[in-house]
Length: 97
Image (cartoon, rainbow, N blue to C red; front, side):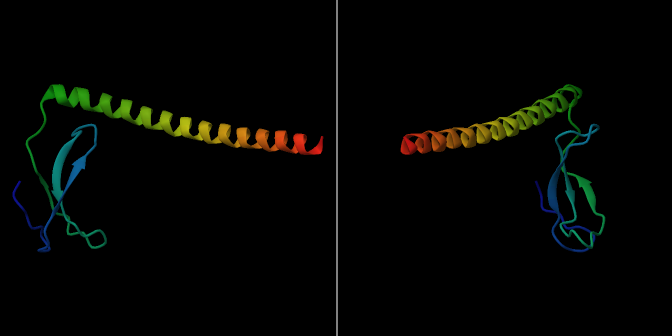
């Protein structure tokens, strides 16, 4: 892909659209966050209809898997704390007797 300059003269950056209308489609935009000049241009042609059907479902599955992984990590952390506490109680019981 060719390098493009935006309206303010700085090199533009490439981002990816995750909207329903253009899932996974890359575009050029101004790299400046605060004083953005509003530059916008598509970096590639529009995706085929089949890709536009499949990508939102894949994104949804990926988001569900990430949420599930986050929940599993929280559960594992909780069980580790409970296990450590039970060992603490066991050692305390052995020392007291």
